[in-house]
Amino acid sequence: MGTDNKSNLVIIYTVDSGQIRLPVTAEDIYTNGTIDRKKVITLAASNEVDNNRSILNPVVVDLDKNIIL
Image 1 (cartoon, rainbow, N blue to C red):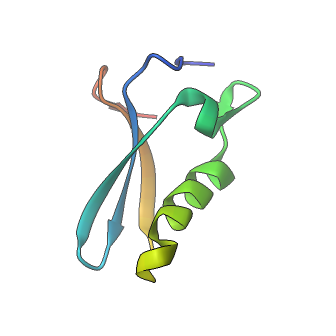
Image 2 (tube, one colour; image 1 turned 90 degrees about the vertical axis):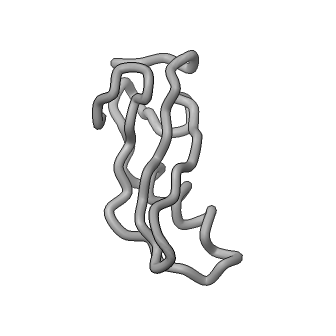
């Protein structure tokens, strides 16, 4: 795994009203040492289900290192 649960990770994605930052842990999004895109999309989509909004372009960002993972 390239990061750990102490890292400051967020999923950033776009909805019709703007950009959303969803804080996550490495445990939430990694499977066998790599980012699991299905988990990222599922977390972002489930965050918006009550708002009935679609998500676009979800990316994982390590805010401590200022890099897109």
